[in-house]
Image (cartoon, rainbow, N blue to C red; front, top):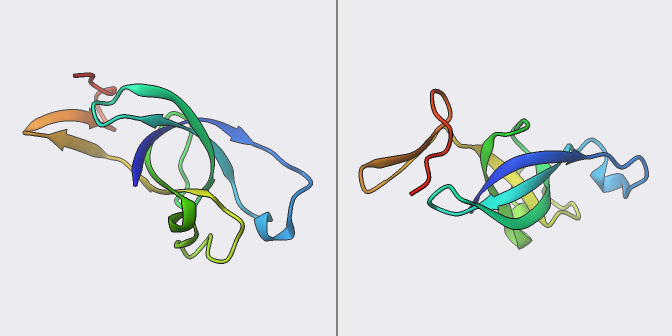
Length: 103
């Protein structure tokens, strides 16, 4: 699993029928210190994530392991919304009350 931040959405009116009903999100990868990278992926949303939220996402064959994405042509999936993360007793991110804190 990787950390990411939802930065946008994708709308596609013509797509493979196995993608019907999936919400597609643009996710910018975030490092463990909370710093945004320049890497983006389009991911299926399995948890109802929204714009600006910090999430956990998986890529590759792991992306097809959720109930929503099983046996679908998906290479990335948002599988969790982060409430807080801490490293070595220091809070790096807290969803309510503070923005991401950079090391």
